[in-house]
Image 1 (cartoon, helix red, strand yellow):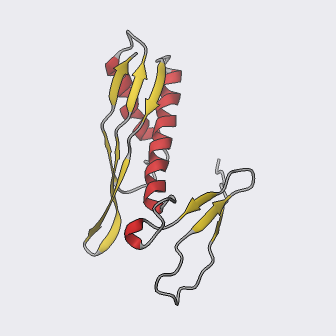
Image 2 (cartoon, one colour):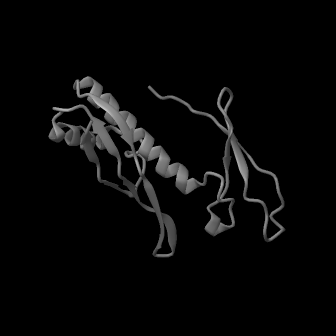
Image 3 (spheres, rainbow, N blue to C red):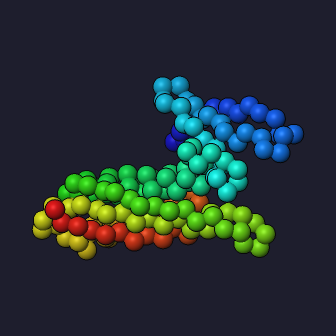
Length: 148
């Protein structure tokens, strides 16, 4: 079953000005607007989300939600998750693209939880994460599991 997720991207400016405004707003009824821009290296506003940030956060979020769903189904108790993701933008053969996204979560579990099972479910989440299945860059995953 297909689902649709519409959004509106709004920009105004003048591209004849060499330093034209790169800022825009993404909106969707019922959600807070998201202020976006290009990366600072491309004359964008460093205080706004850029496409590189958003792609990295999409993979990080989707992977976490898939992992948590797998843990819930397997009755593995996870009590905290903090990912330190990083998208790597590079130019290869004259084409600029995100070549890697690193996921480095700290996963907090209760004492006695099987660390091997947590890592297994983390790796399995990659197979079921729809964002991971939608991108061509390498996803480098380095989880750290901590008992609390």
